[in-house]
Length: 316
Ligand SMILES: [Zn+2]
Image 1 (spheres, rainbow, N blue to C red):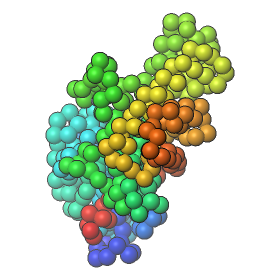
Image 2 (cartoon, rainbow, N blue to C red):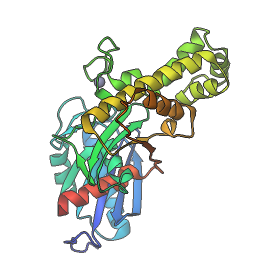
Image 3 (cartoon, rainbow, N blue to C red):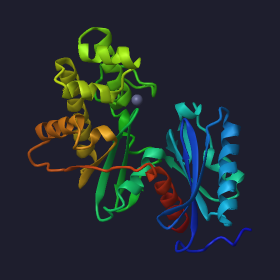
């Protein structure tokens, strides 16, 4: 069934693993196309997770009839020197030699990167001539720096903007720091802020929605703001200002040609995204015209980026 591994990127097949807290997704990628994909829920123990990744890769190989040249592993955690240092949602709390373990399990070269970094490689593919800083907001804040199509990762974790400290008196972060970016503004923080406004009676709109739904999300805070709820507007505007301070620090460090924003709430078409752009215009230095550009993700950027990283590491 298995053909000889390709020796050039043209026609070569690469594997991609999106190793997340809920799902383990695996794809085989040729060129820019996913040609087969498989997924399974993430099991609990680390050995079971390795076995699940290997099983999914084998299923993909069986479906396609070929083996990948190398496999890119995108991990929801902090990666340094091909080891996972911490990945709370995967149950990894200490340095774990993931690349070594999975290369043996898959009998194939592997390259390990953070999942936001992997997605960033794909989402910035159109800007290969200069530098892009990527800033994403989902549950937390992720980031990456891409220079001329290449991930700038330092020892692996460069661009982890969610853990830039924006308030030295801020809340303690699971990373061990205080006042980290993602402790001040993130999907999780905005959800909690919405529930706080409902629980304290500051927002009748959110209280009503909470009673109907049983929980609140960042989008509810935005809906309340759009409906004219003053407390929600103030909370969201403050969060947008903090977000713009984060952008300012990234620009001061990286001086990118653009900051690419990933995540639904950062689109220029929604209230929070608009507030972030307004705050950025207010906070940026007069000489600094760095544009904010939204990069939509159809859900496959992590897999396609992981495959791209695997190809580059193998072929240089
Ligand atoms: Zn932190």
